[in-house]
Image (cartoon, rainbow, N blue to C red; front, side, top):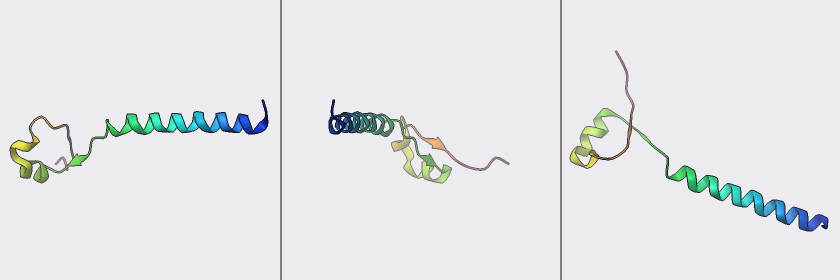
Length: 57
């Protein structure tokens, strides 16, 4: 294989891995919500996946 072909294949492999990683992460993002924000959503928050942030006293 020529040097150019090796770089081309390596670039395609890295681009493919980056694309797969980006697609996998976007579906698994969970954002923090404060209790006030969650109460403000009311019934719209039911069934939604959230991570609750706040202070423990």
